[in-house]
Length: 75
Image 1 (cartoon, one colour):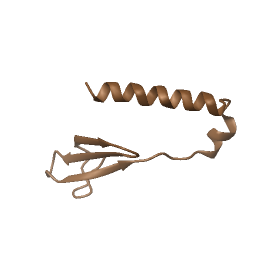
Image 2: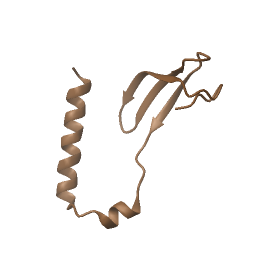
Image 3: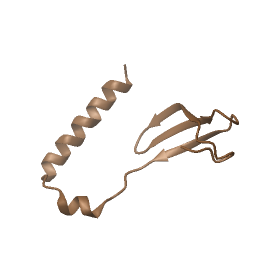
Image 4: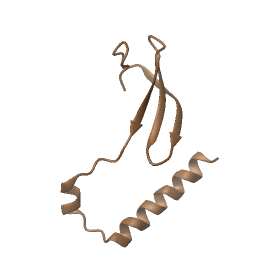
């Protein structure tokens, strides 16, 4: 991720907050500027056309990923 202040590519994640979106707090290692980024889901229509999973399978996969992520970040 590049710094919006000095355009350096040397930035570091200093914190993360998770809810419906993932917010990351970053700090530029060159100029010291701190900023926040937000991760969201990008809908890809080609994936929807090519996907062979049923709604139940998608829900099971997402639930499993969510459970694994909670376990990882709550340790």
